[in-house]
Image 1 (tube, rainbow, N blue to C red):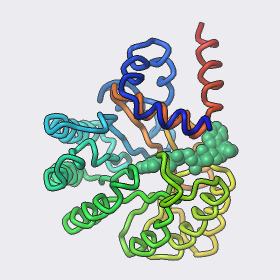
Image 2: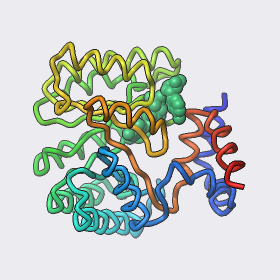
Image 3: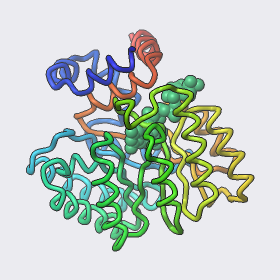
Length: 306
Ligand code: FDA
């Protein structure tokens, strides 16, 4: 119930303007978002790298981009990759990109051109790009663009969402040599016709997908904070004889940092997804939808700052 309220709120631009301009909203985003600009995200990335963690940086942009927004997003990523390289943070840091922010909904061809430019900048900086997964209406287009990008930049990563009924099939397609695949539960409001909506069904699908990726030829990136799924991933890695260099865990910035440290200390690669930018409203609402308990966490954090 609360999940659907927060997901509906994520799509409300009026509410977004209201929350984004209020200091309460800004305080709530703090802790989950590294800051407004590249300088801020470099500081966060440096701290994580010093703690032995890997990073993927996401620039938070408007989800329905205009052509000008899309061009600006491309330029932002090119600048970001240059700065990550100059700071000596590549290849430990890569970037995550939403194709919607590169204009996918306006014109797929232009989005592909922008994505190629970002991949070229990543290659120049000695690192890679992962394409975030958005709602199911974009999945076919995103996977087609991924296939095009991989012709020139084979290390480009995909994201597959376990809640989609199609995802086991997509895992089979993508579990090939050199293929980097982030598996997550999925964060959008999706209809029953295309997605599992029961939490247990989503977890079971996650495990089926994990089995395919771990037994395949690619490089699985296990993106979850769920202790049960983390334990199962460790078990499957042992079962399929994968060394710590042959898969990784991923978690969101500010979420279960003690677990991130524990997994890294156990010898795993742990990559932290670090968002930055002033368009954090939709991101924050999706995090609240996943875990309404975050509300209490933020309230506590705010109270302790006074
Ligand atoms: P979930 O939120 O279901 O929680 C399961 C259990 O984990 C909880 O019961 C609790 O035990 C524990 N837990 C979770 N959060 C906790 C916390 N803050 N503190 C303590 N315990 C906690 N989605 C998408 O649609 N497209 C994408 O591209 C991405 N990309 C992405 C990258 C990375 C690195 C991550 C980690 C996630 C994404 N996601 C995503 C989001 C993903 O789909 C999903 O919505 C969230 O990760 C939440 O699901 P979890 O698997 O973490 O568990």
